[in-house]
Length: 86
Image 1 (cartoon, rainbow, N blue to C red):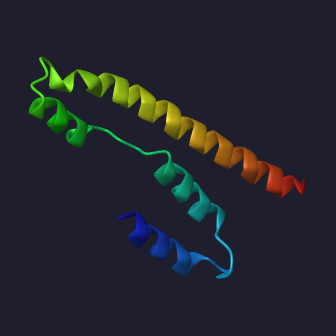
Image 2 (image 1 turned 30 degrees about the vertical axis):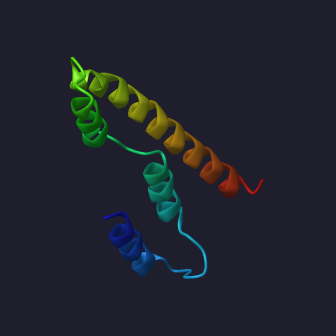
């Protein structure tokens, strides 16, 4: 889905040689590793007979929220900085 979204954003991009600000934001969010429910990790914990394999969901949501928030803040900071010319 991320590649398809990037292709659609490229169609709207007036300068085909550089990434648009929207493309950079999508890349930042994608790179931050958005995970709502970590199904693979839960499956591994089930395989190793964890007493409560889904107990990591809350921690994963907090980590995802922090990582995605930081990615968006840094993206906005760089965007603001590039608009100011410095």
